[in-house]
Length: 256
Image (cartoon, rainbow, N blue to C red; front, side, top):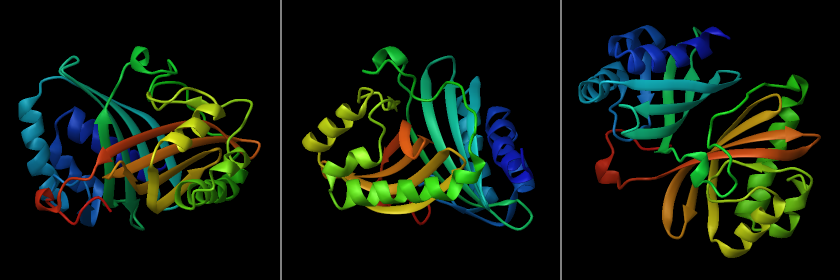
C-alpha cells in the first residue's frame, strides 16, 4: 500500500476509530479542503467535528474494505458499526493528495448500511472479497465508465445498456435492485434518475469509481459508484447516495 493510501486509511482508523483526532495534522498538507458538508475546512475543522463524535460514541467498529488509488487520488470504501449496532453506515471517501502524499481535499457520501437480508439481491452492500486485477486496463476501463454514465444516464440512450453491462453476469450491491442486466433495464424504464454531471472518475485495474451529482424524483444527490469490469463489460456494481442538504446547512463550499 502506498504512503498516500496509508495516510487515508490511518485518518479513519487512528483519527476516528481510535479517537486520536489530532493525527489529522500528520496526514494532511498545507490545506485540507473539506466537502463533507457538516465539517469545516482544515485540520481544526476535522478535530472540532470528530471530537464531538468521539464524545457521543463508545465503540466504533470501522473497517476499510477497499482502497483504490489513481495518481494523486485515493478512494476508500468503509463499513462502520457504531456502538454495537446503534448505527451502521457505508462511507465512500475520495481524497486528493499533494506531492508529499499528504491529504489536501476530501469528498464523501454516507448512507445507512442495510443487512443482506434487506437487499432484494441478497448481496451485501459492501462486505466481501476484494482483489485488484488487470492493471494494464485502467485507462480503458475508466473510459468505458465515463461513456456509460454519459450515454445511459445523461443522454438517455437506454437501449445501449447492453454495450456496457454484461448480459451473462451482473452482481448488484444496491439493496433495492436485483442482480442481472434485465433489472437495470427495468429500472431505467421506470425511474427518473439523471446524472447532472460526473465530477470525477478514477480507477485501478478492473475497478473504477465515479463521483457524480444526480437527480432522482426531484432530489439532488451526491453519488459514488464502484464498478468491476471483466472483458470490457461491467459485471459488478456498488453505489452510495446521499441527499445534498440545503446550502444554509453547509459548513464549507459543499459536496463538490
